[in-house]
Length: 313
Image 1 (spheres, rainbow, N blue to C red):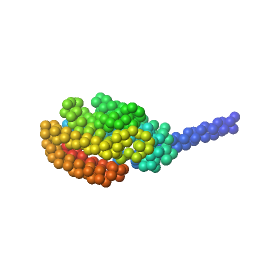
Image 2: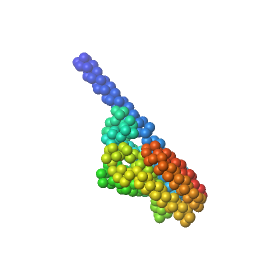
Image 3: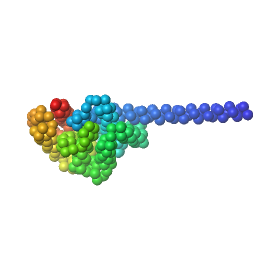
Image 4: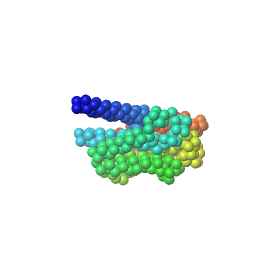
């Protein structure tokens, strides 16, 4: 009987050891997936938090303790939601990214990270974001859900996604507006003022997406992704981006003139000629991948200055 007990105990220890090793291996795999996604997407995720932060400020956020706590939950949720959007897009675009020479070296499959693991990370991020938004309030939950829905449409819908010209840019316009409102409704009910300001953020986001389509033209053409740049040409898409940015500058100046935004922003209109000059220079350089990145860095600088001016009382 004693040998039988020892044999049973040995089997139990072996099974327990196997489970532990499997758990550790699984944990390492998911940790590697998160590390990879953070290394490729973290900068973009952080940059995009400017919209809800400015939204919170323009919505009348106060620095009392409850307000700071709710802002903390909002930013945690926004970070997780934005990361989810990027991770889900990577998961959905896995096959096309492998065929894109500029993306293939950064595709998660090259690092032995499975699509299932990426899907689990995307799902976990979305759940985490929703939990944080529940702590903020109902508007955050609803706006977060709307942003997530737009993300699903963009990344996976054949009719309302990235393969449909113009529609994809409208998707980004709506997403940019909603992301601003996510912060605005932290301390202020949704109103006409918030919607008007959100239009500016949406236009900037939509214009930036058109520039991104110019940047990704070669890979999208190779994969048969029918973006505006692929369907209408890089030059037309780039000019559409410039016109959309111009509309954003005009709305910004109008909101400042009406007193909806700080009057200091009236001076932002002087940045528009610089934006146009850089755009003309980009056209002369030739609209390739590097030129689109060059342009992106410059217009982001301009709108960072505008964002700082929005903080003026």
